Length: 415
Image 1 (cartoon, rainbow, N blue to C red):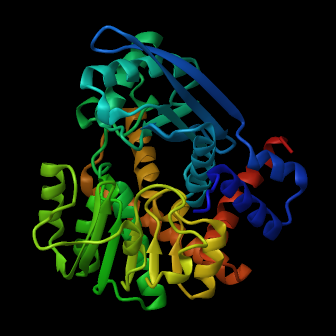
Image 2: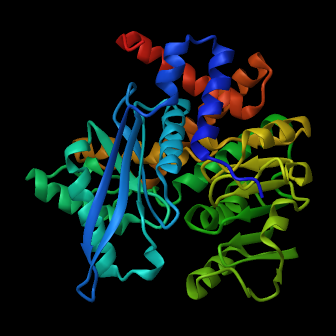
């Protein structure tokens, strides 16, 4: 099995876009590398009283267009390069949807599945203490990501506000609504992805009421399963997977029942009426729309030739490698790249920051309307770049994002 370094993939994507834009070498080098990187060694006491050391990072890739913005991951395989890559993709994501933010990311190398709630709280507060001098609503605004959630943000925000001695709810987003969170945030990533699928279907004539499959049945995957039918007028969900199993049913699953099963049992495995299939097989099913909603580098040069979906909506960050992109493009498969498809989350996080800044909150309908306008406009901006440059969709999205960031870097006199 070929291995991939996500950060090298991210840098290659910048190089490709920069060549299409005829950028100078100094600008390219600036955009390829994070502007700030912080490494922390966290000391946390476990429930049995023993101390444990955790390695953690916060990386601010670019803040030319505004405060760095990006999630915090709790994951046992976290590395500095995965966080660099994710921070980079956040820079392009915020630029593609044209919100005044930059890109950042954080992570702690830990196994949250084997930690108690009290241990997770102490770890969250230790991380907040470490990053406190380097974040804030006008500097860098974290949010949840893999194995973190609104409760994690509540602990971190409380610790941060204790340190600075004042309220600053906009320093973290995707918080519980009662402490400054926004309506419409929990399904924003999935909703944004489904909106882009709608625009792709309207533009190219794909049929969203046919079959679809979801790889990764976490927050985004679960919500996409339900929103696909609700927003696109139908569709048959024939396959889903999570870390513990992949299942298939040609007759289709009821998304609501599947979500309830996952919440009850912790996995989609053994869902009544389902047939287990190998994880890799799900990606190669003959479906109209495929949602990769798990981790990086799952569609590679080794399996891209076998993919049969007409549309791939990347709700995960970096699920497709550059070699696979080129193969899919030649096959005529329409990829909606992560920096566009999964930008709904950061867009509504930005809405949360705006609402926190003047302590006035919108209703859910307003959030959904404004998200729809942002994602629809972003999709068609990328589509225009795709037509003008005659490139595949990821390159088109990168051209849009890189051009916007490079322009501001030049205006500031950084290059």
